[in-house]
Image 1 (cartoon, one colour):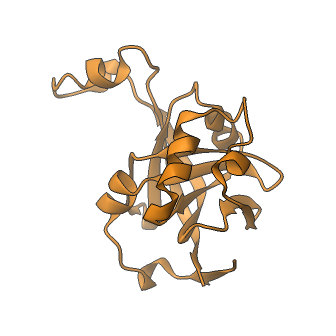
Image 2 (cartoon, one colour; image 1 turned 180 degrees about the horizontal axis):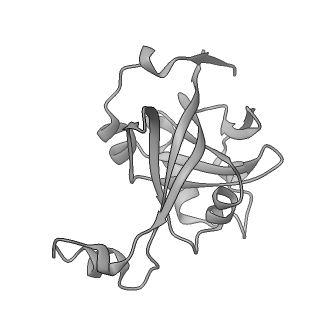
Length: 169
């Protein structure tokens, strides 16, 4: 499998479907020491005159330390035929297994980061800003804290510039 580097402006996709319905793998670390996790929360847009991806990771996730401790990470997007692989990567810890091997996906080195050969698109992202979500910052009372944080820690948001886009050839 090979990738072609393209400009983000050349692509057309629905970010609500891409992230919220199709999911993505967030991968931090180097090409030889990384971890990945499935995510379905995030945004794509423009901030500070840069094309950005914002993603959310709980600090108790193994992938958190890889994203936190590195300048870059990737977001890999797959076709529906990889739903089971993404489900596996979202429900197992890289502390306990080799997720890529067990999910049947192949790591691919891209700009010093790790994406996956089977992905339709991989975004290489450079961290610009992060912040921790906290209970006192919620404005509306839609039971969000009870629904999403009753037993889990609050997420850290990472805002990252999209520095490269790779699509499968």
